[in-house]
Image (cartoon, one colour):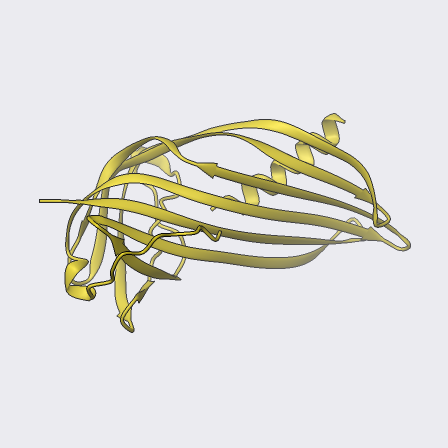
Length: 203
């Protein structure tokens, strides 16, 4: 049980980086992007799968999480070419669901509490516009913890954006699949995640 729980947590950490039903009021165009914002929240869904195959034997864990961040702090300044985040941090307090399969048969289901905090960090994320409602972060936007209180942003990614009143909503998806050989076993890690970030524009 303990080993399985550790595997599930490992998958979750690999995939934490969804598709939310949003009531979009308007999308007034790129000119409205520029300005000062307060970080309101991030909502995410992650699905991580880790499968190890050794001959005719296979073991697979699937970890699913859904959460809305808490204790959100920080500001974002958007100009014509970059997002500058200052003191952005949040915490996660949720329950993850895990499924353990042996040779394709569900062997166990578990639920585990999951708490995690991102300390306030600073980052600069260059971007360029792509059409009327999309943009590309050439250096990402979500900060990854690093030394000295400042973390680098995540890799290049695309995002959709729209406004709901004075709230800017950014939507991004994530997919990664890797296969390696470990001690003679073929190990495949698949991570799928979607998230939406809400920023409130201030005058």
